Each structure stands twice: as structure tokens, then as C-alpha cells.
Length: 305
Image (cartoon, rainbow, N blue to C red):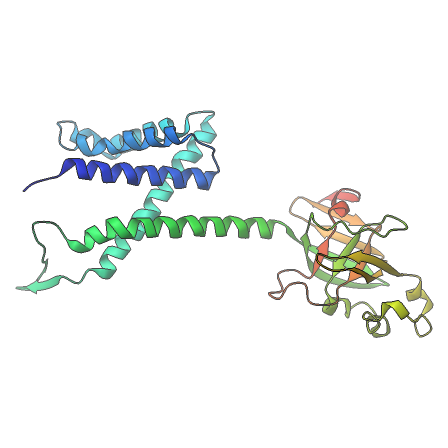
């Protein structure tokens, strides 16, 4: 049987380079491309070792671990132990994930199985299983790309949900609990008092604001205070704003008794805020019901959670 060692080595070199590249993307390390190639070159040399007397060493689990340490050190260097350990564990995770995906594809498409005298056997030619080669040449890039995209999606979801917090709103002795999105792009202030303005979902506002106030949300130019209770009239502000791609508009805002923001580390209470009522639903998937002003987290009373 003829073994094309150069082809196998080149294939492993490219695989190792892609695995190290994906590892750098996951751990967010800015690595020189030459270091990635160096790590891939060292990793691909293990193919040659399998045809030498040292095969018993490199094939042993301890030998593989030591070899992996050399690969990761060559690609990412060593700044501190925790940094290096994270790189090593991520490299193993990516390798197992990609390997598992390729193995799954291989057995999913493999059909050349026959039962001979009650024994399962596979039929193959001297050139190897065609399905295996398809898995290697086509499956690996697909699994790599799919893994990369999903890692980015997981990271975006993580960032998204780290910005969502529980918010308790108290208005005229009525309390509601909503999910708030911390949006650094929200820079809306009351132009007179320079008080920050958060945005509350229209449907949630119905739970704590009288219907007589809510019904006038679309006719703020001619807002009528005659049919509104005095204690509510004192809370109301009409705030001008300009959205993306739109001209000047008006926003109905209510001054609350208190807004309490609950994060993992602290409890933030503030009274210096206006609650603008949105004209529509803020999140169609109901991930959040209000958009918080970033100043609410820095100019408020903080308490340990």
C-alpha cells in the first residue's frame, strides 16, 4: 500500500492552521499570522513522528498533551498562566467540536456497509473511503465556518443579555416590573432640566399610567390637560426629540416616584429621570420592555445587591 505522506502532512498543516485561527477568534487574541503558521507547522509534524520509533511517545495521552502545549505556546506565546491555560483549553474544545462534527458528517453519509456472515463490514477500495475524503475536503471547511458563525452568534447573544436588567418602576404608588435594555446610544434629555429620559413600552405604560393620558400620545401638539387629574398633570412633560431619519417629534414623558435597576452586582435607585412612552412595542420578541439611559447607572444611588 502506498502512503502519500506529503499530502497527509499538507492536509494536517492546513487543518491545524484553521483550528488555531478559530481558537484565536474565540478567545479574541490578536495573533501574528506567522505564529499561527508556525504552530500549524509544529502540529503537522506529528504525522511524520507516527512513522518513526518515537510513535509510542507522541501517541500516548501525556505525549499528546505535551505536544499540544508546544503548539499553543508557538501560536499564542505565554504572558501568564491563566492566559495560556485558556488558550490551551479553547484549542482542545475547538478541536473536539470540529472533529465531532466531521465524524458525524462521515457516518451520516456513509452507506457502504454490508453484513457478511452476521458481521458488519465496510466496502472500500485501495484509495480509501470516498466518503471520508469528501468529509475531509468539503466537510471540514463547512464545519469550521458553521462553528465560527455560531461562536459569533453566541457571543452576540451573551453581550445582548448582559445588557438586559430587571427594572422596578414606581409611579403614583403603582409598581411594575419590566426588562430594561441598557443602551449607550440613548442620549435623550429633557431640554429644560437636563434630566435623562428612558423609554417605556406602550403596553407596559398602560399598567401604571391612566388611559386619559395614554390616549393623547399621538396628538401631543394639542395635548389637553383639562380631563387629567392634577397629580398626574404635574408629572407630565412633552419632550422634543429627533430619531434616525426623521424630523423633530414630540414624546410624552412621565416623572416617576422612583426607578430601581437590579444588576448582578448592585441595586441602582434614581428619582431624577423621566419615562418617555413609546408609540409602539420596543421589542417584538419581548426581550425587553424599556430602554434605559446610561446616565441612570452613573448618577444614581448604588446599593449592594
